[in-house]
Length: 493
Ligand SMILES: Cc1cc2nc3c(=O)[nH]c(=O)nc-3n(C[C@H](O)[C@H](O)[C@H](O)COP(=O)(O)O)c2cc1C
Image 1 (spheres, rainbow, N blue to C red):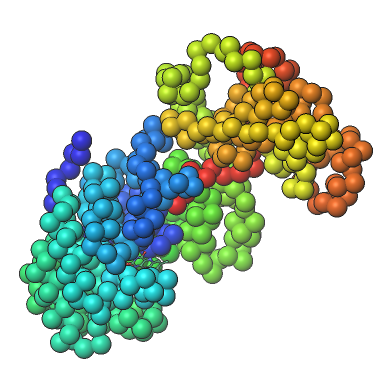
Image 2: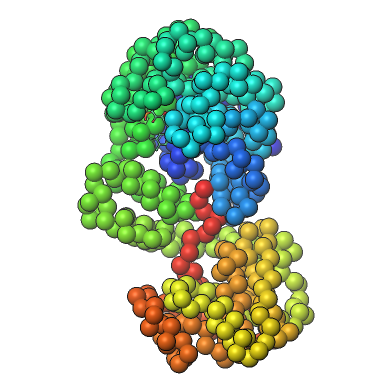
């Protein structure tokens, strides 16, 4: 199924460095657009990856590695398949191999992070902690080299003495890895310390495999031409750029840096196209804006609470509308093609009362939800508690909940992004079909007024789907598109 060659070449390459939170799919694609040859994903921890399922996302045309809580831990796509290197955090050879096997058909290379000095990494024996355990390094790398079909690399920092550094890298080379990336700083050094071009040069002159020089942002690399200067200063085969690319990914462009506004707009377009979680999009844009965070645009970005608001802050409101419509149309088309996969019965004979409703959390006080209203009503009526039965369909990983109250089942025909939202929607169907208050802001209900006074400050909600309850029939009316006020838990990492 994989179309690229099994061996990625690490000679003479411009490389986007692994960066936690920054190196997600939109940034990697943008770096490729601007001329990066190879892009590393952010470090992903082996234990987390091993909980993930590989899911082909037909709507986004991506491959997603999805955690049990439905978060997308790693999202990739065909465009980068022959250029993306998967970096893992690990301290165990068997786990590392299991992760490599999980992702190897979707990536071009496998890398082990041996340079992260942060406590969360070193505490578990990962990252820079590995540098003081060469036996473990050898075990991990040789297990990976033998066991995976992809080229294996590692990213290290330098040791306190050059002699120890050289003996470590020689041992690393003997494991058969394809290249080594060297961040020319010691474990305890921070970005403000100068990078040692001399140490990287000594390593490059000692090894036969390609050495990838790293650590040059700010002091050495501020624009495209500086990348080659850094390569020459370190005698390395290739250069890996982190911060300079995070600040402006057009650093990889031969023609020189593009204006930040243009770069950020391109970034946002990818973020929306690939349903990147808005918090991650916002984080990356903040890294790009840097000292302009206090500008009017920076303030708008800071206040944004959704992908739509981010788009609006950057004059991309119309783009957001178009893209979400296109994605929704793709979703609908896909579901229509495969009703069985969608989990929809061909004919509904279930006797379940159904309506096309969604829970728009902005329309409700956080203290009063439809589920709470339903529970309270059941208690008052001395009925058994509502029972929620929720399923997730594999096709798009959306949820649908059926609630049973007094032996009658209720369900929304609109599938939701999370179990919680689906349950709220089912509760709404039950409450509406029984003509009961559901806790909407501004709803007339004496029993709810008391609680609303305890919870002021709520944003009045948007429109609501008004559907009549038809026992046993799927609602045939066009669905009313309601913002749920939540980002998809599938977005993002
Ligand atoms: C925001 C951020 C996140 C980073 N995350 C990772 C990571 O996941 N894995 C890793 O090996 N290094 C990580 N690094 C370190 C960089 O890859 C790189 O080694 C370091 O920033 C020096 O390169 P530079 O001078 O080009 O910035 C990160 C650096 C930054 C600034």
